[in-house]
Length: 517
Image 1: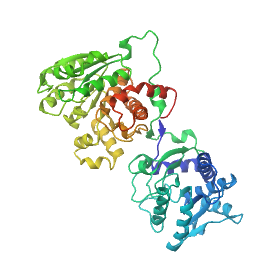
Image 2 (image 1 turned 180 degrees about the vertical axis):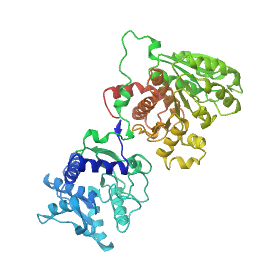
Image 3 (image 1 turned 135 degrees about the vertical axis):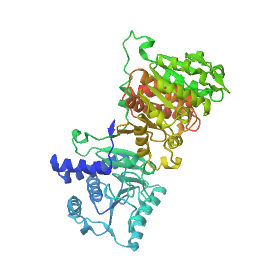
Image 4 (image 1 turned 30 degrees about the vertical axis):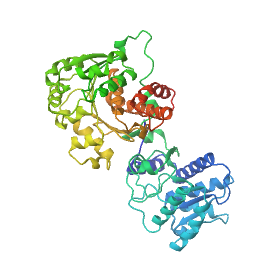
């Protein structure tokens, strides 16, 4: 996992690097601006005079932009600079870089009032690349004064075809999440570590592609951080081939309590998710009606028939279900069970006596409460979507996406389980506070059945002895990666959960090669 920083953490990282490690702030600024210039030069060919416009703010972000301008100039690209506010207001390392830039008689068009915006507007109409170096990590709240109109002009240029490159993060975006008016970037070159606001709404809609540039911090400086981004290595670690004489029991046995007459497909997709995730044995525990529709034997799955009432599992089958679940190495409980009184009774009879690690998903969450989940003793992972998370916490569903990280952590803490809060940039949170944002997947996975495949995949990892937080992180990365492969092969509009299953093998192979999808 790669570290992810809040505003407070990145400030402390800067302080330690400068004060404790002795690396001057000017060196950090130099490395940051050089990295932005390098990305521009690598991505864009034949940049002539006037085709790169750089917007310089009042603080260190503006200083990074000045360094970027100098390195572009050294590479034969002469950018146009627009300085928002009097250059005399610059301080510290930013002021140093203004003196260096202006030493050869170069300067910038200074924007001090609304009349000056006409010159900027004209330049932006000709721009191929616009570099946003206005506001950095240290600036919170809505843009004030002329920053708002300037941001609107940048966005207008972007919509007209210019490529917008944000320095560290788009101006107007809070590094911890939230924005009223912000730059809409095509590329964000962020420094040292990504900022959490880039991976929360609305940041992930504003930042475009995110590239992280190392600017000189020592690896040990990142110790103690509790926010992370998933990467291929997090999944690859659990797919090293076992000994050649491994038998099916050695690859883990998963029992799946899922499905009903109305949602038989959920049981099949969950079981196949576990099988394609590498489990040696997968047993479907479900109703007669579901078994008739799914026919698990044709997929190499074994089955256990449970008594039902109205097509859903009956409390009378609780002992049979519990015996099957406890005979496995891990359990997956909930997909497609339905939401009614009898299902709730059955789950309340099963869950307190479960002895193996479990994934509790979908109707496994809809029929219980946080008090029951918190009282369970076995290792567990809960996988709510925002609506299920809202019901468990007793808040409005709209609230969850307003603070996804906060609510994921709250659910993990109150349930005592690892919480995988589903959605774009799914968040995996541990009861102790650590959290990881998933970096794979996209809107093609927003289709019924995707969560069932994910639940089964997590179950396969648990059955092989992977601890819950790592299992959830790895499964989310693989599931998202498989979804990306499926979208590329089938088309994003047409790819379904069966296509995600088909491409899990490609996702596992890419993880083992160390490829980020």
